[in-house]
Length: 348
Image: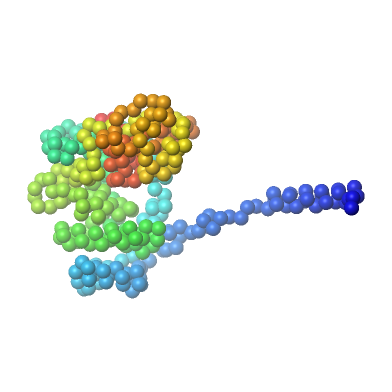
């Protein structure tokens, strides 16, 4: 049946009204937008419930697997409370900044000047460290400078409280910080250290190396041969421990760290690798073919990562991260961090 002209107009009007209503209705917020942050769910100084299943399980493992005495655990954990600032800092880390804002935080005239002074001051020590571990001294000093400003800033938070705060009240990294809490108690026992005496950062790192507890136990070295691995006061131990970490992650002396590959990725393979971050790998041949450039060989033909560094003008500077670059990201998973270390070392 043929529709009359007035009926057509009525239907069109209803359709237009329906569309306008859909357009005008504000989009509903995603659940993630309303989800409170970890710091919003606690109060400063809130006592941690040591009778919770979480802590009962932790104490059981500490007693049965690591032979900690129950009385010792009761004493050490007594009165432990939440440090809200730790949770606030965890949700506002520097690594989330674009690179043009991240870089100036760490590459400063003061750090450059002091790094040059340290290179001269510890020349003979660095000769020995380089010879034993095969890591360039400028990289070692750059990491020392970025981690603790050559020992001037080791962190002011009580580390034991920090680790408990992150284990109890930061669900996203709870498993990780449970492991670090155990490692911390073990290293305190092994080195005759009072757990309440150690200061560190909001992320659970400490000393001039800013090792997390598991890294200290695995990579710290006694290079002054005094029977202690002292990353707080012994410069030989500090520099050797940094070098040992990179050595253990297959640093190759004299090999490239990165190479620029332009401001645009010209094939999907490179774009895919870039989207995967430090886990995305491509061959040197793939990079050269896609970007139509020549870049240095990679040790043992190992694959490269694709790193994007945001610039102030809105462009992105892309570089290929060689295995040495990847060794730095084993220390700190941020590509921004690895690039800042490398560029600070270049400034020396």
